[in-house]
Structure formats: structure tokens, C-alpha cells
Length: 96
Image 1: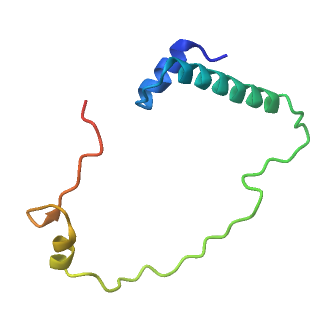
Image 2: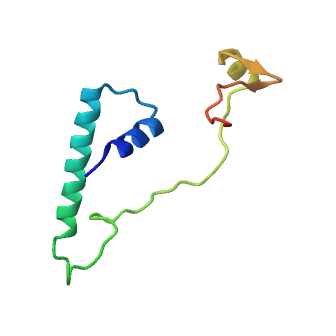
């Protein structure tokens, strides 16, 4: 069973703010999901051949050849913000 401390940890990782009712629902749902995995773990699989995928996949690759590109001035003009000829984007990784 998932306990309150684990819910606290998960909500902190996901940066979620949940009401007490939502926390209870999340706890019940996750406990139920883990129960399904426990059921799957009890399925007898002796003699069943392992497989990676139910369908065989084949990569269809094309030659990696350079093609036409947009002039940098056109791309820079479309960007909301540039700096020293580069497109400036918001930080996506915290440095904490």
C-alpha cells in the first residue's frame, strides 16, 4: 500500500499541489495500480519464451544528406529573442 509519505514524495517530484481529497484519490489509485502489477507477478510464465516486442520492427532509414536550410537571418527574425546571433530560449534545467 502507498502511504502518505510516498504521496508527499511523489507530489513534490511532480510539483503538484493536491487537496486532501485528491491526495486520498491518488493514494487509492496508485495502490490499486500496484495491486495489478502484483497480480501480473503471480502469473505462471514458466516455459514462455521471452520477447522484446509483440511485433517485429524494422528501421527504414534514409541517407543522411544535407538539404536546403533557411538563411540565419530569416530564422532569427522569427525568434522571439536572440543574443549574439543565437536564438535565446528559456532555461529548462534547474541549477539547484
